[in-house]
Amino acid sequence: MLDKIQLQLLTEIADLHGVPEGAYNIRANGEKAARNTTANIDIVTKTDGKSGIDVHVKPGTKNESVHIPVVLSESGIKETVYNDFYIGEGADVVIVAGCGIHNCGNQDSQHDGVHRFFVGKNAKIRYVEKHYGEGDAKSSGKRILNPVTEVYQEEGSYVDMEMVQIKGVDSTERVTKAELAAGATMIVHERLMTHGQQSATSIYEVALNGDGSSTDVISRSVAKDESQQVFEAAIVGNAVCNGHAECDAIIMDKAHVVAVPKLDARNVDAALIHEAAIGKIAGDQLIKLMSLGLTEAEAEEQIIGGFLR
Image 1 (cartoon, rainbow, N blue to C red):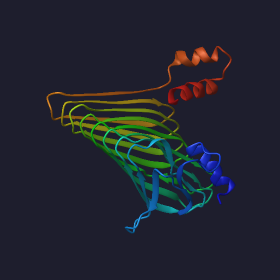
Image 2 (image 1 turned 90 degrees about the vertical axis):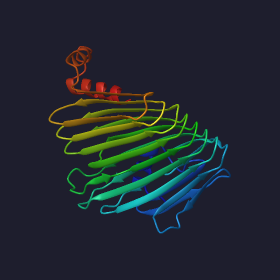
Image 3 (image 1 turned 30 degrees about the horizontal axis):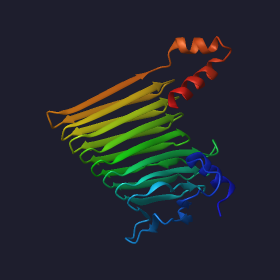
Image 4 (image 1 turned 30 degrees about the vertical axis):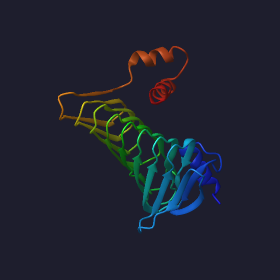
């Protein structure tokens, strides 16, 4: 049974107010807390000595979902989990992951997750990954999350990824790597906010290997106080393809933001674009909202909320 804190974490990272319908695997404090499979989606514990699961989605599966959230509510837990997803040809499913950490102790709590997706021909997935941290401000224990995501897409497949981290994570390094075959598409929308002394690094490496493959990697981030952010996007065009990466960041207070683009065209018909913009909140936006009765702090929150939506 999940306790009150763990249920609250599930609400934050997976919009769950209880046990979900369909297939799911809920992990709490390093142990399996709940699991369910369906006729089309099987979840099995790894047998290779690694901690984690294999998720098998049958070919042609439609309108089903998989929830695999992780919650840590004890201080001092450090774990690395390996989850592999095998998406059958022509399937169309939603996968909801993410990790929530509640740390009120003086020891660091850390979850490192390695997710690998093998997406079959003409299959489609929507993948949502949310990270969230909370705890007593007087405690010295940190909340650390280091997700690694690998995506291998076969011909005509489609992957839509939403990567969100808005609150409470002290340190994170997010690494996403993808290889796309002919006609495959990968879309990524990242939303990130740091504050205090937090640090966040996001690294995306996408190889467009087949003719007609494409990717669009878009990051929206806000850095407050003395926090630090690094965004790296590398797109390699090995075929007739289209690649676009965009970093748009709001910097506040004494924060530090770095955007590092890398475009590698290895085919004359590879069309690759990178855009980056880092700046503070425009003064006229603040003035307009303050003229409507908002304080400066309230106006900033309204602007940030709209920017990260």
